[in-house]
Image (tube, rainbow, N blue to C red; front, side, top):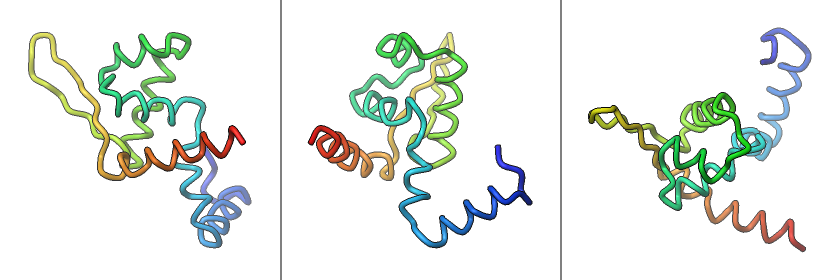
Length: 111
């Protein structure tokens, strides 16, 4: 968390205004976010399913990443009123639009 009146906050605001790519990179940065988005697209859309395909992520980290992806508008959380209650995640149109970008980044990285 960056203090609101710090030089870091001022620098971040300047970079966001100067280059929109910084904002985009900030949205998908994080060790697990891209992989989570890809797995949700592959229908691994519940916490337990995500945990099973990424066993080394902690519950706390997965929960935090999911909240950040939801706050950035890339995923939505659907609460299904069953017993027990089930929570599914799905990509928003913005999240779906990110998929080809992630695949292009992966190909670029391989070169």
